[in-house]
Length: 64
Figure (spheres, helix red, strand yellow):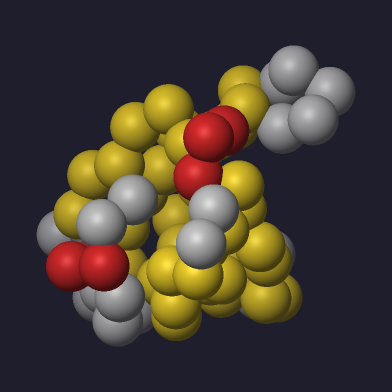
């Protein structure tokens, strides 16, 4: 995930460690190495995502 998404709200398609594919709406706080630090807007909690497990990224048209 490029640094250009830092500070933006995006929708990601993510494959978790169990192999489940989920869609998440997140605010990207930082991209550090192989990880994305973000705030999950549906779960209302901070999360860390492995870049290798992010299958797709789309900028969100809604506001945070």
